[in-house]
Length: 145
Image (cartoon, rainbow, N blue to C red; front, side, top):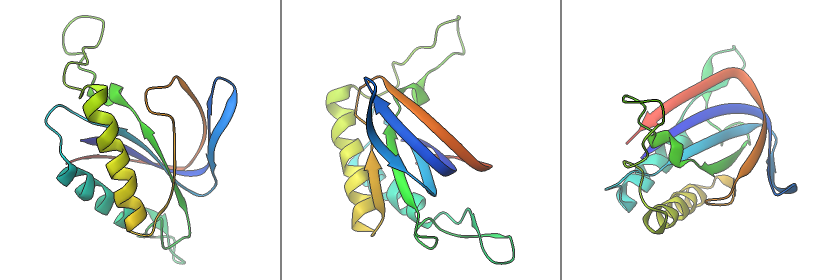
């Protein structure tokens, strides 16, 4: 399981021109599910996302979590995080889990975040999403579990 976690000031997600989700201060989390991933990894991922201290405290140090600052999380499915472009010009996505496996794990990660008290919004699994994002910092963290 892989995630790109970005600190954002504002993010909007649309599908087919319709607004689906929008958050202000918080995290945009692009989540990729790989072959062999399990529900156990969903719990580990949620714990890391919820506790990651990448927001500034009063002294300007990255010492606060998304929950500490009252932020939201926009969780976005992103199978292309498993794109392998080591050979040829077109990435191979064979390491990404098939949709029938990946979607339940994506939903489990959402549930695990919610169970930690996080405010979570989502994209539309498997859809062609258009995302407008105002990165804060920018702060971008790569995490794999």
